[in-house]
Length: 446
Ligand code: NDP
Image (cartoon, rainbow, N blue to C red; front, side, top):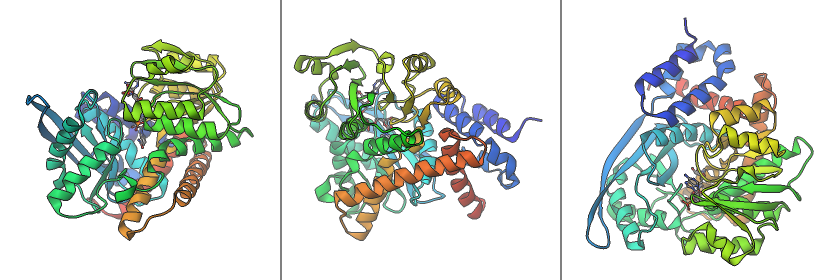
């Protein structure tokens, strides 16, 4: 007879045949929680695995809008409300042409356990659209966001589901989405996080994921008596997570030599300084330009359509998108003596790459732990909104750091408890799973 875990993985394949990303994460998570399933018959008795891989609700809707020339366009909108055992659904919205149900289910499933690790009362969700914000005018973005919210509003609320940003959804989009929600509902409530600071946003929310990722890396390095000072670091991406990862790395004395976007990678052997980073922020956040433009302003090499993973480094911070480190990239990193890989993005390393890093016992920070800083500060934004209070940047940063240290400690201790010493993937999956699964059992068959 097949083991309980294998049966459920097979069932997931039958029920979700064209969803490779979702199946990848289901397999990865279920296989790594084997020890806890084997030791606790209560999970089998409550059939918790079959229940936990099924989203509580999946909403798919039409988003019609018109471009500046009056052409009528239609995109597909999604919200996957995966699990509310620990609190209101919480997770970002992604606007990118690659968005589909499989990617959002993978992200929402991961988010459920990530949110559990923060220790905050948050369920897991994810949503978005296959809309491509690139090349669109501000008015087109606004019209799209308004149409998207015209359907989404009925499914969300400050005690029901609190979306945030993700790829393609930054402060501008959150503003338009919030404005439309407020207009429809006639109520000013903390229904979205990542809001601007002067109308309900938390200080440090934009910085949180990147800073948190670096705090997590610091904790991993401490276990081998190292710090980030003078370490050569490579970072992928040049969006929200990448920018703030680079900012914190520079502050802590590391030398960052790469950033990238979906068109290519820049390699600055002199290091990206604070001033150069400011220029990149303006390029990306205001002019919405390409990272290639960096080479016209500063001395650096540019590799068209290439990722940074063959450039020698001590530490790598993949911070762009899923599956950006393949087994070949992983081998390159190891060949070049990289000893720390920290997942700023969601699932940037594919399964084989993760397996190799774990086999070679380098320091590996899995996304659901390493990038949990963003949702942690989103949780703090919700608290501040409910209390009608505002915490200082220093207070939020202190809490963020404490949460990242606690997550690392929890993952490390859980891994050790289940005979997987140093394996933070197992530690994060088991700790997150136990918290959600126990709450589900306590709440009955719902
Ligand atoms: P942004 O949209 O701000 O930036 C995304 C970056 O990744 C851009 O530089 C983009 O390049 C690049 N990118 C996107 N797709 C690809 C691709 N297929 N190949 C190479 N590069 C690509 O998003 P965020 O920084 O917010 O998010 C980055 C990652 O971090 C995502 O995986 C997200 O889910 C995860 N994350 C984000 C959190 C947050 O708080 N923002 C929280 C936790 C996780 P281009 O400009 O060319 O599109």
